[in-house]
Structures are given as C-alpha cells and as structure tokens.
Length: 232
Image 1 (cartoon, rainbow, N blue to C red):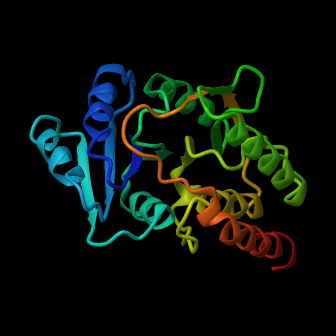
Image 2 (cartoon, one colour):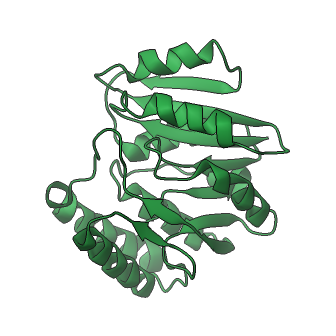
Image 3 (tube, rainbow, N blue to C red):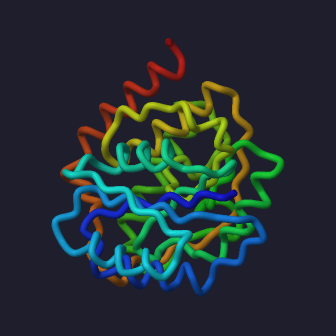
C-alpha cells in the first residue's frame, strides 16, 4: 500500500480542489490511502474533507484540536500511515498528483525519493524571483553544511520507505522540519534519489510561509541540526 500524507491548515479554499484533482489524476497500480491531517484549522477545512469521506473510502482524516505546526502534522500522518511507502505532499495543488507513480517507482530501489526543483528538468513557475533566489541559496548552503549531494533538501514532496521513517520523532514544528527529517535520514545512511518536477505557485488560498517571521528560528534550527549531524 502507498500512503499519501497531506497536512492541511486553513485550506478550505484549496482542499476540495486538491481532493478532486487527486481522484482525477491518481494512477497507481498499488492500493493507496490519502491521509489528510487537519492541523487545528479554524476555517471550514475539516467540513470540506468530511464531505469527501462519504464518497471515497480511501480518504482518512486525522484532526489536531489546535494548530501544532507542519512538523507535528507530518509526524502524526507518518505515525498513522499504513503503507509500506509514505508520500508527503502539500494540499495547495503546487505538487502534481501525476508525478506520484514516478516517485513510487523511484523508491523501489531507494530509501527516499525527492521531487526536486533543482535537478535537470526541475524548476519553479510563477514563483517570485526573490523566493527562488533564497531557496536556491539555502539549499546550496545546506548541501555544504551536511555534506549531502541532494540538491533540494527543503523539498516537501517526497516518498519514503515506511520502515526508514516510521520511528522518527520530529522536534521542529515549522518548515524547518523538512530539513530535520532529511538530516535524520542522512544519519541513518539512507539512499536518496531525486527526480525533476516543476513547482507552480499556488493559485488558491494563502501561503503559510513567512520568511521574516521564521528566519531567525530557521537559522537556529539549522545550526542545531549541524550539531546533530556531525557531533551527536
């Protein structure tokens, strides 16, 4: 079975369209489940998802009573996933459903497969140039700090072998949790592979990414992860 874990926080504008797109575009020979983690949304995200639960038995909904952050939403989803492979992706339609079969095939011979913006054939579309520049710089620096050949360490669209990721306890709550997961897997000598994908800027709802609010916290988290990677 393939488990697709999708965190969602205040995504009432996008989550219905995401589910419709998933149903339309998913093309897997394996059995699968779509596990949506509603991370304490204060809008109608939960109500929208519940309408689809009645129609599609492969959808599961897990609720956090309060917002706990991306890292804890991922931890909850991963812990409750039933699949031998676990995919994580966003609920805002920026990650193409049609790429899922390629990720699954890629992971047959690897522990982790990453949908990467920074390998040949990958990229970003309609994303502000300042965000592209910062993202490229951050990923280049992370590759140096962690001595890792993966070009898109901060990517959120990935697939893992369940046995490699199930035991992780994610400490960081925000977007830095994606780096934490990767460093955890580096420490365990996992085999990584990247395949290209084009990230589209979201058209529905509002991004939860705020560079100025999270900047200092992100830097401190990376420094603590450098210590974990090389000194612990």
